[in-house]
Image (tube, rainbow, N blue to C red):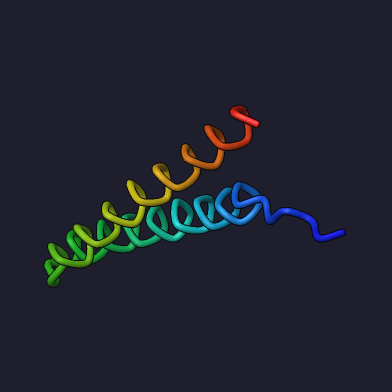
Length: 67
């Protein structure tokens, strides 16, 4: 018997990894900003990672509660 792949089991940890990496990068971008270094694109990319992680994790929660 073949088990059906549960996508939410992969989405939840991936979303949490993206959120953690994005927050770490945002903190690092803040340090770069305080030292008058180039920070804008690094900080923007960190916010993209945070938002993508929240969307992926939210989709995992939706799929888990739907089944």
